[in-house]
Amino acid sequence: MNKREFLSGAALGAAALAGPAHAAPRTISSPALLTVTGAIGRGNRGPLDPALDQMMKKQGIRFDKAHAFDFASLVSLPAVTIRPTLEYDGKIHALRGPLLTDVLAAAGVRKAQAELVMRAIDGYAPTATMSDILKYRFIIATHLDGKPMPVGGLGPLWALYDADRFPDMAAKPVNERFGNCPWGLYHIDVH
Image (cartoon, rainbow, N blue to C red; front, side, top):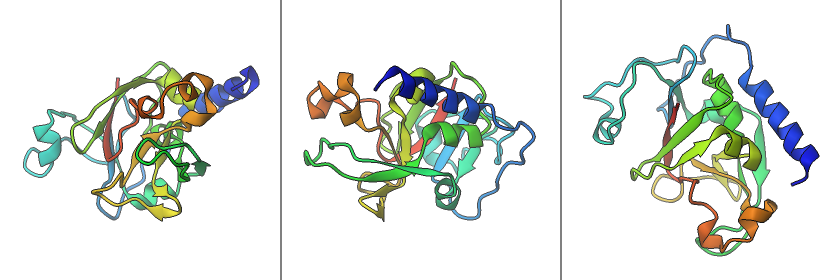
């Protein structure tokens, strides 16, 4: 990646995070696939319900407010397509979804120096900095090779980037490129 691409990506990410503070939170009409907590805006749902949010409770997640996204709200955001070589079969695949910075902006995240804990349904929870999210242009993939990703596979959501496009990642063996990329993503905590 050259300096100009990095700087324009950083400027776009900063602009996304600086979106309108008065925008009304979008309500969802189907089950939530992704819940964003921590340093967010007003949110569109209340606190953790220990009776109904069993997986979050068992994984030690706590929050007073959250922004929940269903499939429709995620696919309504502008989508990008990446084509990384995946470690599972060593082949190039097309993954499509919104930039993670756009998802965070929709949740009201304003912290440019944020740290994110991205949690998968199996409990895997890598941490990434906002600078890495911007640098690598992470997406929240909703589609793999043109089809929505099912639960039980790599979906329904996967936070990842096109590792083949970044020399520091492309130099690594393919099975070491995606350590900060949880598939089966369902929760992001913003610090």
